[in-house]
Length: 490
Image (cartoon, rainbow, N blue to C red; front, side, top):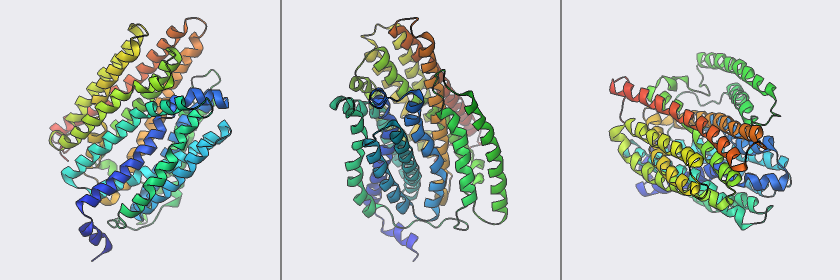
């Protein structure tokens, strides 16, 4: 009996869920480091003298590196061993977190954050590939429901956790605790990952080779696409020349497509399986996720900036406003993972309506209510948004991979994650630049509260636009499914 077959037989239900729990716990650490740093930004600015460009690199540099590494890491895991790639990613994440915690300057912190992003890019596609490998049918929907709940909790609890650590230490110690937290957690998780993750996996279709030229072109293309957005801060000092990187992206993309076609014509396996985009469910879900993830990280960053800078709310209390989002999204994510097999894309459409209502309520609260009532009203609005958000991520992920072969699970998940990271970079750039451009324009003309109300309103408008795009894609996809052009079941 082949190793892969033997592994499927002996891998019990209990062990599957234990392995899945370890994988999802590590995924939550990578998402926490995207969101919990947001609330520590004012302390980092003060401690290390970071300006707008450095702040953007600290936040979006992580996303940039994350996006560049995802697809080759997913492909390598599919071809060789997801387990080995996962363990290697954990070691890199541990070292990067340690370097962030002891960073003596903003330059070292930025470099360490980029290394952290690389480690997250190594880890996340293995989590998605392992989940698809471990579960089939309705069990996979439940697994992705739990995955979505954990990711939702991590995204929304991140600011609260970051604010708590900032408040526990002095100005130069509190933000460092945000990174120190990762060290004991990784040391705890590593031996369990080593023991529980499957040592074998189904053999990949086609030749087991890694397209090094295609990998380099893909990485350079993703870098050229994301970099101008990462360098956008809303400051008057932003260099317009950064947008020339988009022309570089177009040139690299053309070279990449030509190379991949030639590679495939030679009978070899390309780094990106373009046939995946012929799968309607996968393509639609990937576009939807890109638009949705353009909105959500920017939502939490601009919310905490408004509460801290506009209302002078301490970091820990600013972070607590997102707790209702976390709790609601966890509940609805868990249950939506159970019902997506029955209701399909309709679950996502309803969820996006809730997100739009909640985010609109948060902006209205900031503009219309007295300052003392704003945090409470925003918490209620975030509860509504979280209830909707939990019905978006997990069902959409399940629908995305429903028709994807298990042997392509890692690379398919990686491509989707690249879309999410590109969306995050674009969303952060658009919302943060709208926020700070308003501050630079109005500072000194109006009171502090009015300036930051206007900044949050403008950023909120950008965020709602991205969620609206996701909603339109979901409705179009739902109609296609009801017309029978796309399967509407997992």
